[in-house]
Length: 143
Image 1 (tube, helix red, strand yellow):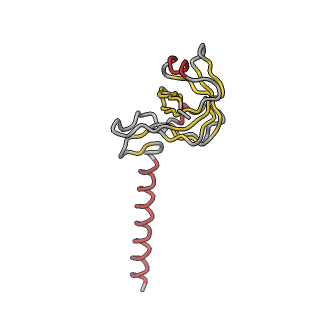
Image 2 (cartoon, one colour):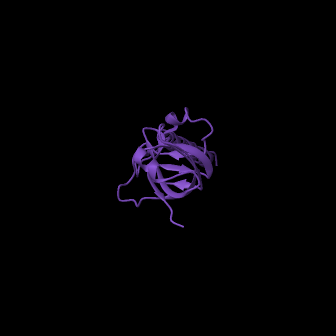
Image 3 (spheres, helix red, strand yellow):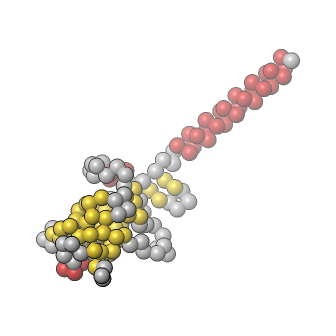
């Protein structure tokens, strides 16, 4: 009976050690999904207070993935500052995920701003460029 008890305790102890080693191994990959090699940009998020619900991957993502356009309404256009303020629904692109809000974005190409004005309904794409959410595509919706 004692021998059986020692075998069970030994087996349980080994199982606990194995699970602990596995958990430590998994914990070393925090912020990474090794299959797609996506990286967590939490180090960049420190400077973006109030945007904790936003996900931004450091890698550009899969080029074969179709472009994801989001809906928005132009609230302000700052051509000199290369910024646009958009009231938007949820955003899910290759590298950025965030909920609905009104937010100012830098634009990749200032020429995009000459095609829209305050009040316009737009389709746009936001991607992570050097740790910042940048509008990389912007089109005015036709009524």
